[in-house]
Image (tube, rainbow, N blue to C red; front, side, top):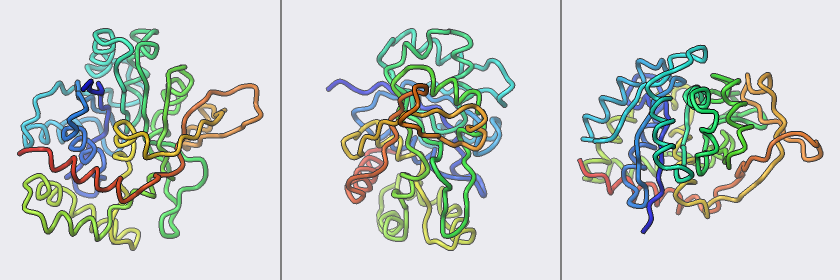
Length: 291
């Protein structure tokens, strides 16, 4: 079986107080996939500062005995280089047109890799992103600001207009990936060590979201993009003509205009076809991780 070569660029804050857990859950998912060759992890800012993200991810590597390249990215959109950007350039040159770049935070590292090598995007197989909105994102009556694309709108625009095959899993489709009481009971009732690890790392976030939004559970944003990488058949493809400018992307908005002669084609899936199967795949994959 030929494995999917993946680089994971993320802003992992799983386990940090008051911070989202989705990047960490996504990393565990990638580790558990026998059809994924995870070539390395690069860290970016977004959920928190680059220092917090990098140190937290390094800690997670130690806790889970992960033996993979881990590189620290730029600290802000104004920074022009980083170990992460250099790694990205080197790895795509090693495996030209073979790598799926999964990016779930700010896109500064990708912009900086392009600044080092203007052919960087041409050497990728595809980019899969979590981010962006096409309309207001509402949870239980509360409007959420977009995070990932708006962190560095110039970088986002460079990536979206790069010409490489791009799929975006927006906040809207991620609302279909609710991790609620039923899913939590699966963690609580299992003797699996990795399930216990996930429970311990996410219980504070579960309670935080319940207090903040009045819902029992959280949305598993980033893992939706990872499941798309491994199981694209679970999603309805939806190619659109996007005309967003950097100004639009300051708030993460993907502006669709089917009739415009300008713009760039992006796949923006709108539906998870089978949410039960989606969740079963995630749990089965997590259970493959031995600690």
